[in-house]
Image (cartoon, rainbow, N blue to C red):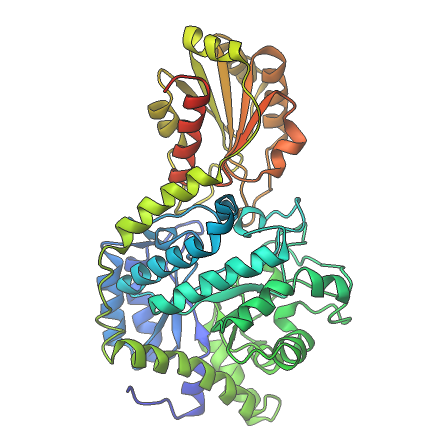
Length: 520
């Protein structure tokens, strides 16, 4: 076992998890950021890092170098809701969580198995802690940041799939995280950009938002991530959950009985508030164990040390948080051996099997309403199919971004393809409509998904273009993401939703359209 930190400053530092790499502009590959973190851990012996923009072939060696240079083993955490490939380019990419609902009774077993495969793959890369599953309920169609990241709009189903993910991670040897407590599903703003507010009554929160978290705790989840969201019925002061002792200590730990690690959502988000490093003592006193993605680690540690010394942060609160974080490291070593941090176990065939199953999930997830008129199939054969891929946020640095245009071109025989960006001038709209009108069928593939700091849904110019197309040609609307966008947009005889824009989901949508048009 590694030696245990003894000084107050070392124990405080174990609560700090800065980011390694970044998907935010300008993007920073994880492996090129290792030297910065290696220098940081000599000054501030942090407990771990949250990894962004890794590479399946290069980052594992960089993590080994970092672990060897660190005075204490580093827990490596990552957002892997959509498989290991979400943060490790070249790794397996899975559809968004909502896609699993299409599996019916098979969904829990499939979620469990894919979580197990993801855990094995992640661990082989040097990742020990997965920031998933999303335990939020899809209770507000206007939600700009949860949407298809949630398993279901039904609390019971969401809870069952959350439990399946947690048990799969545990069997695969890594830690899971239920997020974003006490529920981010009913917000209509993005906590990356502002402080959302959920005004549900306590009774309503109990029935809906809290139910999947109770299921997660019953399943023995190792950690819970806070929401930078205010809940007046839980804390009348208006504090966000991240800053609320009433929500974290009284509700989560006291009433709900959670004994694991409480990790903040990213403290770089606007919803976290200003000067998180200086307010680190208040966050720990309020019930947070891990200060995630904090911008000034040294200042945060110094703030906690001073607060203990002057009596404003009880030392027992800091030590309780330290013990919970250190316990994760001890559990990893007990499970995988003392070399787990520098020599993780191999994944075996997990990535190949997960990729194959991702295709099956994507196929089962396809939702169709209505039928394609017979004359549309004839028109498609005679005059061809034109695909317009609507990308409202083309600049979003999503590691799971798929080459949708290429996939449609390859899988729909003879298809031509255009991309529609967020702004469409009058001349460009006329050109796109005229080009589309030369074909028998037009597929409008709508990439409508949650994305931090970005407006949710189609942009006004894109909606206008869609209306012009619908008035001129036969249109098949296909959402590569939110099912709700179709309710506001499409009135034709047939529409489709794939619930995700990852490559397996786009392939499933393209294949299904080709079959429905009798082109395959």
